[in-house]
Amino acid sequence: MTELLPSTQRTLLARVARAQRDGRVPSLVAGVVRDGALAWHAGRGALPDGAEPDDVQYRIGSISKTVCAVTVLRLRDEGLLDLDDPLDRHLPGTPLGDRTLGQLLSHLAGAGSESPGQWWERTPGGTLEELGLGDADRVLPAARRFHYSNLGFGLLGEVVARLRGRAWTDVARDEVLLPLGMTRTSTRPQRPAAAGRAVHPWADLVLAEPEHDAGVMAAAGQLWCTAADLARLGALLLGDTGGVLSPATVESQVWHTL
Image (cartoon, rainbow, N blue to C red):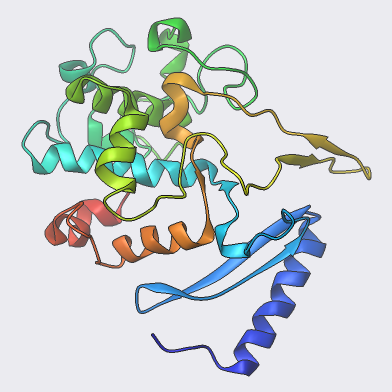
């Protein structure tokens, strides 16, 4: 692995400092992946005492969807599903049953942006049945236009769970994270981890972010991860699959649209 030039490192450190200042974030960690590994990293702000920046967990939010997509594509590679399958074939009884798995993966299913009820990122989650999905969660015809959907990935995680016979979080851990060596990625924070903080947009006020099990919506954004582990996930996307996916799947046009 080629190290970054000292001048490049100084430039990156300055950019990290500006990003924290301009974004008004309590802390952040940045890294550069080169030759499939983390070649440089730095942290800024209120990091846990004594922790190396590349080993501090942050909630990675919607990057969790990438891991969900990998679990779905593993099932596709095994012949257990096809991306053209309607959702009803694997998860009957939802108002989006006629939309395909591929449309859900690419945010083209016309599913609502969020699940019904209280905001899933702010309240403990439950089962699919407890979401109480209805016609209002189908907001567009299929393939009409891109419409980002957390709900869609919650449904995809449930498809994986039912086909595997266990929770999506367990499938992600055993079939993706651990085989890739992402041992510092988890569904709940593990020390050292950055405390979740919400910064008020107009006042000098910082509030604690809630942390809980998102239930069926976990696949949409619950994972916590470090910079070092994110570098490994990035290496997978660049072709170092570690046997988790076939190289042909990573190179396929389908994969690049996810």
